Length: 392
Image (cartoon, rainbow, N blue to C red):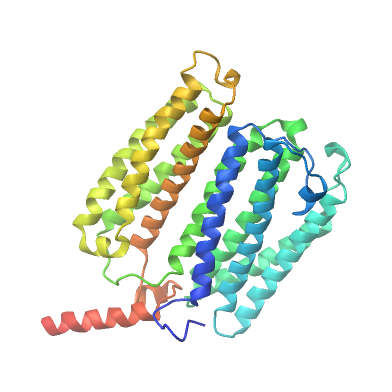
């Protein structure tokens, strides 16, 4: 159901605000995660899984230990926030059998995932090689996942209103679950596979962040029905893709600074900068694009300038000491610079994703046919068509 006091909103006000909260909380989690990497605190506590209240009964006055557990606690909180978001996106729709099936699937999915954690937690005193995989909990989780995805996917195929956003909500929830498991396995499997999962965990965090940004953009009031030029929207998509690949190479440089990763990180930085400058010039020149993103181009430019400065400083701190990068001691200065560089990179990627989604978003009849949200956009499209017809 939409907000009866504001018919132009595609979802209730609280649900869009909740999506924005999920983005903000995830950004804070990324900051803590980058601090864990910068201060080399990834194995400050090898115990996993842990409950949110674990720290209170196992408190230790150690900076690395505290930021690592702060990261875990906030991750639990974000899991709850995204669960409410996913359920809310289904609950906001008119009553129907599909809505009931989708909600039931999400409830089973969440229940199975909590059961999985409980069964893993009951074995955390065992050596990693002796732990048994929770088969029953995995089956329950998979069943809930299949039902929720099937309900959302059928809605998209049928062109149901809001189906795309519901599918994205389910996907974001599953991505958060996978990210939590990656973080836990990075700790639990450290003895067997080393730190290889750390880079995967860091990169997948950007995928989760991008999904939540997309949901937040699509639950906002719809933009003008006038479509920007395709080249502008495609440029924004290309920028987001380049920035994501650049983040991947940056994560490898942080965890395993081999010569290939170093070169590709720099090359993709040049490519992304060039495309970003083109997008910042193309958006103001296109009236429809300018009306859709407004200050988005300025935000992109500001973050890009800051990121270039931080990138140079982070590079010098890591590779300018005339010694092997892994032997460079951790200081407050270099850890802060590296953390800020990685964090601004995440913000830059999220901005590019938001621009790409907003510039390519369909409203009116297009949104209806694609399972989009906006009745308001459809009305606006009809009004625009009537004006154009009268003019001719």
